[in-house]
Image (cartoon, rainbow, N blue to C red; front, side):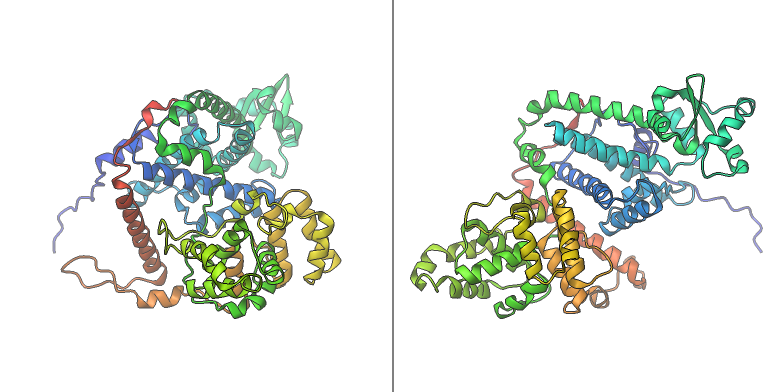
Length: 537
């Protein structure tokens, strides 16, 4: 037997990750200094859109009237972050820190998540510094993200955070707590005395925690507020708010200089209205024949597309905006180029002859499918783009929830079979300007679904409707069975993975392939690095 002492395996850390550990030592950052590294233009765009997805999830939670940081709110946000593949942000928000000594790979992923979080915040400052409305939206969402991350920290994590950021806040000593214990017991709601005695309390001037004073969630004595660990985020949030507002002011002063770079001018200007969901440029679910559109429109079309379909059937014509909105939607649900040409030709030629149709309208349909002109396969319009449309007279494009008169909308909804109670439920969202929530409520009513769908895209609406009705099924399991085994090395046998691991690896591989192809396409046009050191905000 070999009784020689075995040495413990040493953790080998790559130099680049050691540098990240120095630059981003904590999951929660105050974003005081701008990043100093160079990044490629494609990563600049990727980080911006990724963070925008995160902030929009917080906006969705707010629009659903979920109480901030409640269990229901956290459950919704965590589920959406996971569904959107934003696992790095999910780890940061839930403080699921990896131990570098036991799980080096996960810790490296965590460091990368910190880096993406930090850089993307400064990118969005450039996009949201333009107007007061954009600033308010950005500040509100960023503060929600910050408070969520901070609220998940333990007392030890908070102390570490304070040390890193050189913030001189020290918890009360046992003697200090004992001198005001009666006030602490009375002001700390929902905690037993034994638990209150285990909490750390901080003494600050009451003006630093006006939100806690307003809601009577702290003990006041002599102009000072005594704040427990759970509410300590209110103190740090004031500092974070000041940092963000100051950063937006600095970014606004430099925005003209930054926009001189044409590569990022259009990205920053249109970022707030960018669609960040699934790509519906081409349906992968099979063909939809034009003969089925009448039936499909009654239940599986959102009102914006049902409106276009019914207008086309009754008037046998659509203006350019309506043809783009409805034509691209049909392309996305699976109507082929040939069927689309036949469908529009049959309708339009009820008013004009076939020669006029071919001369005036065929090219536009070929163009949408990427067969003529720029040869780009165009993407169907998202809800954000449709809501921004301003239709003219006899134009069916746009969002009916926004463009229709309330009384006319009520009549339309009633004609679709909604009861007066259900009509009012939809109208309640419309009057508040929550058009996508109104669409989600309409979906829930039409499909008798227990869950209200968050609608972001007309093609998403159609897809969810077909899945719910059983006409389309997820092909995830079938795809898994068709995939080849992943090999660990040249000399190793292929290792069998469970379904979740195999699917995740293939998703990563597909994403990397897509990114690589995108990089190659842009390489000739954008071959220079983007220097963030020049952006002081």
